Amino acid sequence: RLGDVNQGWTVALTTLMNERASIGGGGGGGGLGLASATRLIEMLRHFDLADDPVLRDELARLYTNFQVAKFTNLRAAAKLKAGGLPGPELSIGKLALTNNLTATAEFVAHVLGPRLAADTGEWGTFAWSTFVCGTPGMRIAGGSDETLRNIVGERVLGLPKEPGIDSKSPFKDLLKG
Image (cartoon, rainbow, N blue to C red):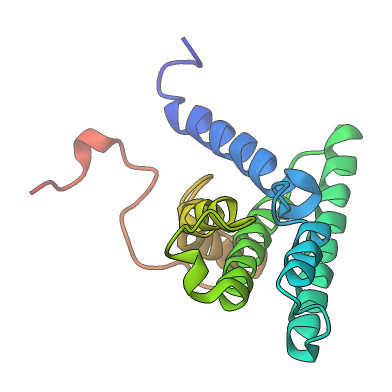
């Protein structure tokens, strides 16, 4: 058994928090290895685009956003290591990760263009197409982005709760059908 009777939601939340921590904190802010600045620079150089000012600006923005996420994750890790409870940093870290990965996927698609869709065996295209295709799935891992935004809005920012069911009522008492 994972918890006491009628404590299933607590167990589920603990599982989600651990998943968010590993997702949001993974790779020092969401690099997941492939999407590191070094690899993106290598890709630009390989396709003779390293001097393109628009791409350099986009890459600088990506790098900055990953660094902000990294330091947010480090702050959350320090809090946990000191015995504190996880705060909104884990949810915010997960949201930052998915935003950063989406922006990276868009950047890669912009750079590779049609090479992304048709794997010609050219350097890097297969790994990047796998990355771009897998990125949208991260939006639901660890709790969907929409749910996390609601949680941050209601619990952190104090916005009014969305109308819905009473979470304190037992499932058997909820209206069905």
